[in-house]
Amino acid sequence: MIKNVIFDFDGVIVDSEILIAKSLSNYLLNLNIKFGEREFFKLAGNKTIQIVSKLSDRFGIEDKDKFYNDIMILSKDLYQNKLETVSGIKNFLKNTNHKRLIGSNNTKPRILEGLKKIELNDYFNSNHIFSFDVVQRPKPDPAIYLSAINNTGININETVIIEDSSIGVQAGVAAGIKVIGLTAGSHWYEGRSTKELYDAGAYEVVKNYNDMLLLINKL
Image 1 (tube, rainbow, N blue to C red):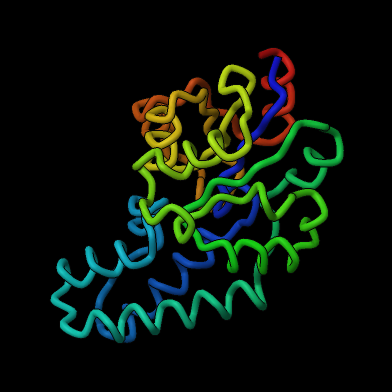
Image 2 (cartoon, helix red, strand yellow):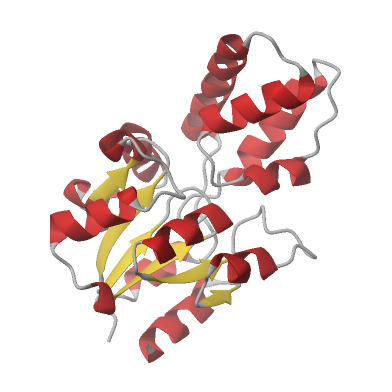
């Protein structure tokens, strides 16, 4: 029986991946660099600094610091002004009584800010939020999820992780926890294959939170 659910944040609770993709694509276009939104999704799950490093090397962008700082400013603006929930998450939270945790490559202050913005902060205890700035080792390293387990004492056999990226799935699997892939976010456009999540080790992949609830209730 599943008693604990660990949520990734971006793409699982907040529908932010599509916003970041559009912002990054437009930013690069101003530099005369064509980088489509769908190309960004191949990098989803990485920390922003990792994405900036990879794109800087790929496109010969010399001032990585400026690139990173510009993207962080754009990202902050998105969180403050355009952030929305992933479809179905509110209903899922209202109809479940699992212990809820968050394990994210984002930072804890940004997660807390996001939860407040989308009015879901009452569903999550601040002490149950585990993030990159806490463990200093981003996914696919399992440190974030191991920290969640070790600091709360929850049983991994009674726990599932909800992830939307292959990097996140890899981290959860490496931590020894069952991972369910979720493709409810806007960045999972029609035709994008779920094979990447299965290949990363996902136990199952579902397309919405109604299916997620049905699956978890069977485990």
